[in-house]
Image 1 (cartoon, one colour):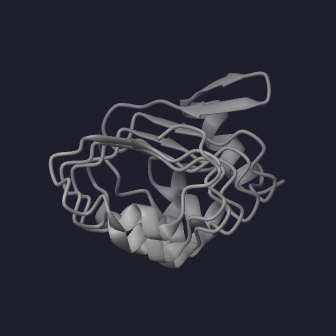
Image 2 (cartoon, rainbow, N blue to C red; image 1 turned 180 degrees about the horizontal axis):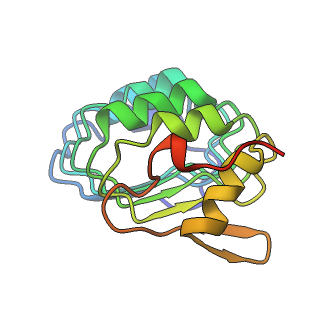
Image 3 (spheres, rainbow, N blue to C red; image 1 turned 30 degrees about the vertical axis):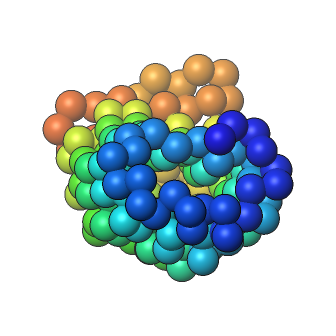
Length: 171
């Protein structure tokens, strides 16, 4: 399912039996909500989940993804309801993540990034236009990452985000 704006929670309920599904793209599915995320919980073989532009998904929906412990790639760009609480859920349950896209998630702050510091497999974190991030987060990027214009990637070995204490003081 790619760029289908008419996908609904009800449609996602039909996917629950597909327990061998490894990749799912629901980009710009504006009618998908937290209830739809609950329908994805049985899909524990998922390694790649793209929810870019799913503006009906909040922190509650992200928390419902906790059973997807084998998830390696999660794309949440333009998920306008995502906050630090959602990032805390990700940090607690999705330990296998290697790539996380948070581009344009304007309610994500430094506190949310700190909550994900235990994601030791994370090698790429994209935070383009996350306008609530401060110099604390961008300071870490300059120290350990590869800034490309306004597009920021965290790339690291081991604990990808380092310890919060490694971040420079706010300017």
